[in-house]
Image (tube, rainbow, N blue to C red):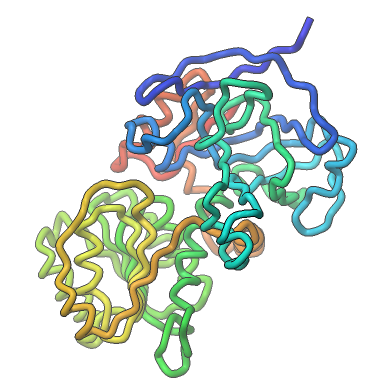
Length: 378
């Protein structure tokens, strides 16, 4: 009798059912993982709410996950991104998106494989309809296809820490966008001692605070309206928090940021809220000649009016940050591993759910005043 694997399957927006699939045979260039923990991302919430119309339902959600190698294809031994040979029992983190290697961007802009026109992503663009089915993290097992970027996790690194690699990759890449183009000692771009504002302290915003602190920022200002998340921002390295409930007017928040930055505005603003109005506000929070990085808008949630004259007069750099290259996983893993005693990463995970309660987990992730990071533990 074939062994069965339990999975949470999103059949359409707002609908998750529990299904059992036959455990697949593993091709020579593929891997089967035993899932240890899967994180719920804001993207999973957006998919559940129907904000990503191109998703090929049904899917098994979750693109943030850690798994243990259960079955290793004969030629998959060398799939580890840094050249380590994999063995059965290794714990790994898998970069969720796979570039095609053939499109214009893959061939002509090799430093930005995240712009690939045809890339596929576990838990987002890979349907569970056909074998091998198990292409998302909310399942007892997960199938890793060829050309995936895989990072072996150190033996003494807890899986609850390693599962944070993907959102930290998003945040570190966003901050690193503010390095370029730049000459930090000439106050061009982010550098040691520079001031940073983070708008929106969800998991990405909180990790943006971590990235800025670890990279040597001076003043870090966190803006949000959720007490739980603002308190976490202080624990993770923010010097000052601005609670929007106490400063409901944009003018008050802008005035406070300027007061804290000698009247100039921040050197770098990272918009992580995913609210169009926050982008317009960010233009007023950043100093002339500074950098505004937009990394909160993965889905289309509307527009906002911006006066082009403000961009011109400020001579400001506006930088988009879309996902990250696969190599960003090494940056994130190293930060988590080597700075694990500096930052209280274990406080990131506020709630745990079983596969059977995956829908409840997504709902809890959307309850922003109650949670920071929600995970599924098979």
